[in-house]
Length: 289
Image 1: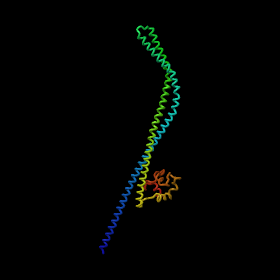
Image 2 (image 1 turned 90 degrees about the vertical axis):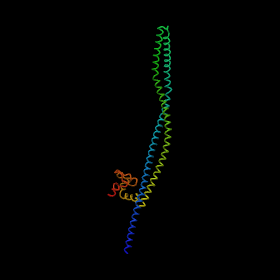
Image 3 (image 1 turned 120 degrees about the vertical axis):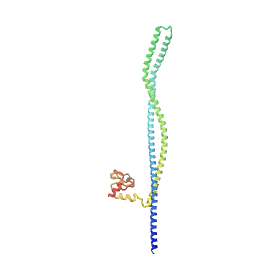
Image 4 (image 1 turned 135 degrees about the horizontal axis):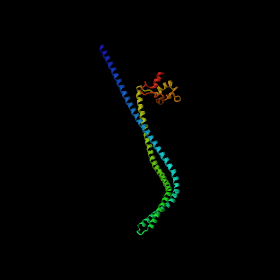
C-alpha cells in the first residue's frame, strides 16, 4: 500500500508544480500583453501630442496671416483715403509751378541766345571791343535774370515734385496692398484647408489613443486590476474632501469633483503622481486622515 501512496504523492506534487508553472506562465503572458498594450497607448499618446502640436502651430500660422492681411487692408484704406486728397492739390501746385517756370524757360533761352551771340562776336575778326563788351554784358544780364528765375521757381518746383512723389507712393501702396492681399488670401485659404486636415488627424489620433486605453482597461479588468475613478475613488473623495475642495469652494485652489480637475492639482502642486502612491500628495493626506 505504500508504493501507490508514494506515487499519488508524487503525482500531486507534479500536478501542483505544473499548475504553478502554468499560473506563472499565464501571469507572465498577461504581463507581456499588458506591456504591449501600454506601449501602444504610449505610441498613441505620442502621435496625439504631435498632432496637437501641429494643429497649434498651424493655428499660430493662421493668426499670423490674418494679422498681416488686416495690416495690408489698413494700409490700403489709408492710401485710398490719402490719394484723392493729394490729387486734389495737384492742379493748384502745377499752376503755381507753371507760372514761375515760364519766365525761367524764357530766361534760359535768352541766356543761350546771348552766349551764342558772344561766341559769334568773339569769332569775328573785325569785331570791335565795344561789340564784344556789349555781348559780354548781355550774357551777364541774362545769367542774372536766369538766376533770379531759378530762385523763384525752386520752391514751387520742390513742392510739386514732393506732391507727385506722394501721389506715386500712395498709388504704389494701393497696388502693393492689392497684390499682398491677393497672395495672403490664397495662403490663408490653403492654411485653413491644412488646419482642417490636421484637426482631423488630431481627432483620429485621439480616437486611436482612446481605443488603445480601452484595450488596456479591458485587459486590466479581466485581471481584476482596473480601478474606476467613479466607482472606487470618487466615493472616498466625497466623504473626506469635497466639503472644502469643490468647484465653488476650492480651498488651496484644489477641486476634486472630477478626474480632470483632480489631475490639475492646486497651490501645493500636483495632487497625484501616476504610479507613485508614496509621493502623491492626495494619497498621503487621505491616509493621514
